[in-house]
Length: 456
Image 1: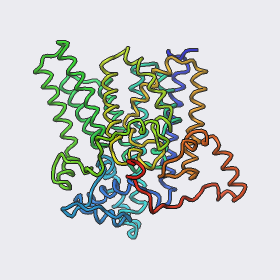
Image 2: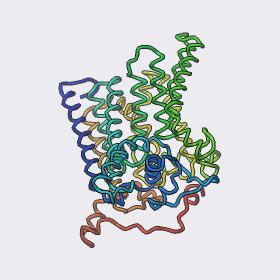
Image 3: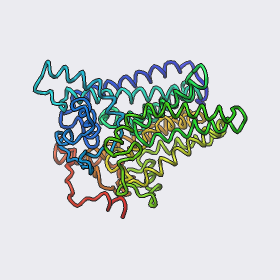
Image 4: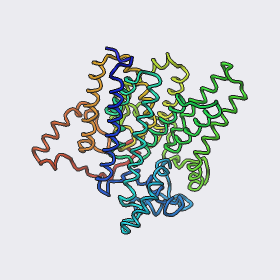
């Protein structure tokens, strides 16, 4: 049975999807509340959270004292300010909750009014989880405009169960990942199915969402290629004259810059220039891209860790036949992001469940997978989804039970067939050490070097 058309069960499937997303959000809230204080904000999240704390408590962007209070040694710029390596979208999202939490903490628990306690971190985590869940629904709405509602729901559910988004939404939301998902999903929603009175309003709205993409993660600004290509094609096809095309592009760029201003201002204050990124020559290796490694390396390779994203690429020929310009624009955006992520020092992303720098491509993967599912039989879909879901669970357990290093490169064997041995290994450890021994303790390596691992 093909899945191309809606059936009487489509409405039921949509309700199941909504219930599933509500469950995900509920689990996110529970995880945020129960998570120990020391694990609320981890890794890079500490620098994101330091931006929020500095803006609210100190009314500036010198996060030096905030990082120190979080137990992180800041990297100082020549002007004495701490280096800010990450975008400000998530920190801005957290500000309203941070303000309210500060008021509540001062009233009910003054000793915890430090800007670092769970009074502050729990609302931040919940806010990021919320936008991640909204991103799933926006992606569903975008795909539903191109395929049946049944296929759209199945595509979203398959990506959720076989991808790496749920871990970030539920267990590690205090980063830019969910914000990237939300921003790019909103961009595609506005671009493809938003309803506006005229082109001026439409391109202003597109510009606003691109600005939000930039705030979420700087590389997401590459999505501006898509509307620029649309304008250029319309001018070439004589649907627009040159002046009208330039006017619409100017409206879009102006709107984008307005939303982007907080990030540009941070660049100016910390870096001394509105358009100077904090990533310098010691972080970017433009002549030494590692594009194949980013995609297929055992070290968090995008497609090796989560094959569902590779499967979704099979939808490109289908999209190409439907809309060549849109398809080619998305390919260009992906290649630009792939190249950028391949020239950074730690092209693997180092830590994380799979590759963590392609969350902005989430709605594109959902869209493409929908076209693939549309051509599949129900039986083949369930077989494929089940295999990829089981593999995803084993991969997650392998990483989080520390059967492979969280930061060192795994071997090819560890990243492939040994994943299927995780239940056996877990059983052996429980048998030998009890339930508490199921998780291994990873020893730190003082000789570990990002440069040695990634660039030698």
